[in-house]
Image (tube, rainbow, N blue to C red; front, side):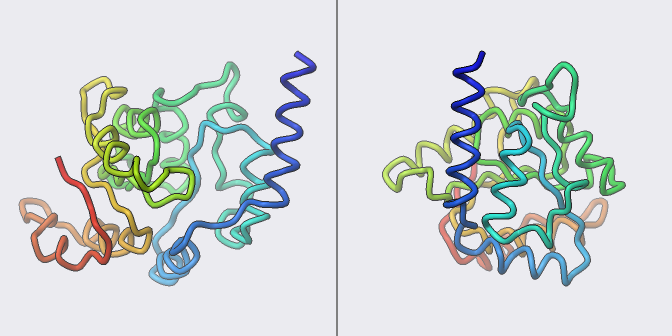
Length: 197
């Protein structure tokens, strides 16, 4: 409808002026990039909304257009989370099996999508500014529940500091069959508070 289109256009215009990266995001992306870890965006949000946010937050060097995948814009008909399609496309774009990928999610539908796609590790994130401080714990518990996943799998861990993604990804990428990689030492290395099942 014209009203819905106007609303979407106004949202995109506002985001172009005010979108900023959350604390720790730039630092983490620089470190992942330096380590040669491929990454991209898998979102339900449509284009041009996401590219506008990427540009406004000065994240374009990390996310060229071909590494932004949208459940709304890249599929006909759209394939919204918790459907797995956008995560499957994102994994294929970096030439990895989903089981060898890490998903970072702040929504129940997103955790469900990552789980339904078979992502190897799902990291919930509640440090974003759109999650009020007094709701962080309940939001983290919701991400751990996995209510939108077909198999009930939720986030494997929920972090509050984005920089804690780096040691998690590093440990995940270095894992070996039959060796426990999600250890107490790894958890002790995390800077912020975290939540487990």
